[in-house]
Image (tube, rainbow, N blue to C red):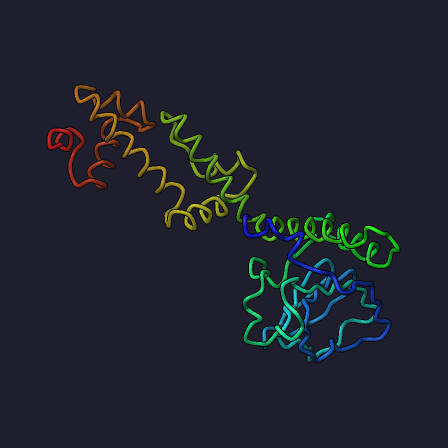
Amino acid sequence: MSALLPICKDYEIESANYITCINPMFHPDRIMPYHDFLYIIDGEWEIIEDDVTYKLQTDDLLILVAGRHHYSLKPCSPNNRHMYIHVCESDKTSEDITHSEAGETKLREFSSQISCRNNPKIKRLFEDIISVVWSEDELKKENLSFLFGAFLCELYKQQNSGRLQGENIVGQTLAIMQAEPHTFYSCSDMANRFFICERTLNNLFKKSYDKTFFAYQMDRKLEMVRQYMLVNPEAKLSEVAGNFGFCDEFHLGKAYKKKYGISPKRHIKKM
């Protein structure tokens, strides 16, 4: 997020407005000297940027980067309604924008297409920017700078909301396992705590650790057992098993040997 901190002074809004296409129309075939933020209020549209096709539906937002080729091969749906904001980077002139420089934009932090269906704040900020653009406010430039900064921050949070939520769930899961080492959780029990399905929880762990929830939990518990027995080498294996959620010492010994290739007691003696 630090890369977005200077956004209030990094951009200048050239124009913004609403457009209604009563009849289907093609997106203009062009390379623009400014960034084009396009928000679909109602309808569908396929727009291409440098041969990458974006299929837009209601409440989708598309960022078309300055200096890149934008066009469409299909017209938008009838009665399509959308909003746009044209933005320049304040440290560049139109002559600075070439195709080769398009990838150097500060907007590289953002995905090209962002779904805003569950975040009405983005749409409201878009509308507020258009309203200020067409106003006679003597503080127009300052207001636009503030609004566009808030708009980009909200977009950044929106595109990363899934990842951040996933990281938060994994982090909370680890904290629970750490605080309750005597409990061996099933994937379904842990998933139910966060109102998600087992598959989602497993996918989050695979993405973070390349392991399923169960495999990660087993590895962590066995490492807890190893560290505990190093400090308490005289502890009975049956008690250790109970302390870390194993059914009995047999199941603990079997899992420990599978991971470390040696029984718990022999392992400790070698350390």
